[in-house]
Image (cartoon, rainbow, N blue to C red; front, top):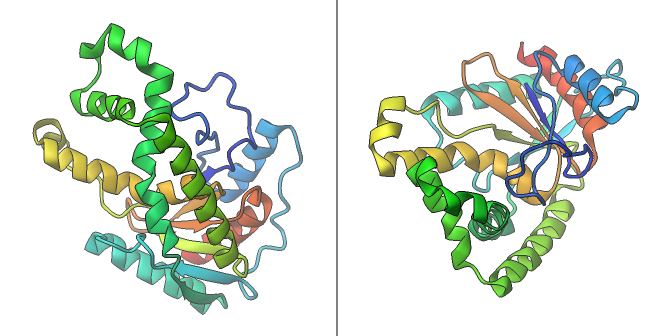
Length: 253
């Protein structure tokens, strides 16, 4: 499982940057308990108390905007089964639509590529042949956006974050599949440009939601290989998210 921390919660000193205003560090561990312990060690605090973990009073939003689009059948089946297990354990699960999330997602090409290319332009252009061609194109796309584009994208994103906060305020966390697709075929990734683009962006899509909204998120295994369930929490809400995750981990098996 993995914990995506809120941007700024942990220091990024020594971390190679991609898009500095979005980059976060966080634990990847075998259990939620280990993640809580490692997070405490990383930030020099006390680990979250997981003893009172319980789903009987939990209220989850089931995100229907973007997150359920174009799911692989295996992932859809694993996710639906996991939602059923949480509901059977007493959790209340309510469909959730946040339309402005689609507008926010559209800003990612401007925000991420502009920051990435701004950070790495000199290094990349000194030796562009060293970079994989598709990634090189994605970095260089950042040069096409003006300062006005970048500022407008951030203004739109801040509006979306406020709307997200309002829409999710009544939930303990929001549920979504961690990824929409199973691991793609390596041979096709290496030889088919369109397949690479489609698979790559689909793989990144759902986890990008927490990044864009500036919140924490936790992914848990569902028992089906390569099929995770993501619990999207609040900004700086990691302790509560870890308690929910510990309870869900027991139920999901």
